Amino acid sequence: GGANMMHYSNSSLMDGLTVSASYTPSNGTTEVESSSDYGIVYTGIEGLTIGAAQGEDNTSSTAGVETETLYVTYTFDSFSVGYQTTEDDSETANSDQDFTALGISYAVSDDMSVSLNTSTHEYESSTLSDQEAMGISVSYTMGSMTLGAALAETANAGGTAGRTYEETELSVSFAF
Image 1 (cartoon, one colour):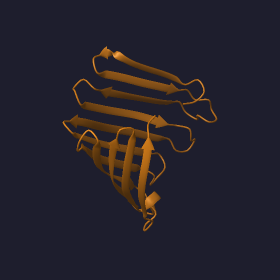
Image 2 (cartoon, rainbow, N blue to C red):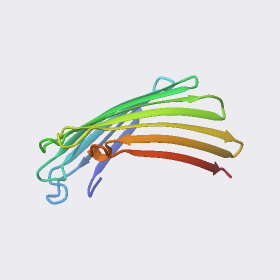
Image 3 (cartoon, helix red, strand yellow):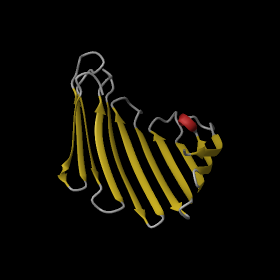
């Protein structure tokens, strides 16, 4: 978003289809060239959501970036599965990036759920290492209290080889 940005969204074209588009005109300083973005989301099949978007960031006078993303989520019975892929194409040499994520969750009961998620962030630059992440989580609800636990690991964080983060989280929340 920026000054004089125009945005349009319409979900009445067809059942389950939402179309969005935006345009930011050039102002010669912070928005060197005009930028445009568009996206569509389809939810016309029970449990299925499909989305796609494309956009460009022309705030740099030397290196615009064009981004495309696709995703799909599907829920059936007690399972939910999601997949996303994103590609950033930069005008700067060796600056392209690709991102892929996959997640699955299972509702063991009305009170308990578990999930497993993984992602990879690939860099075109040979000076950066691909970042890989994985996490598993579980939650249990008793009345108005929810107990949660999660384990996550990220290897080559931020593209730095050998930079690994491991996290463990325990949580308790109350709803009033």
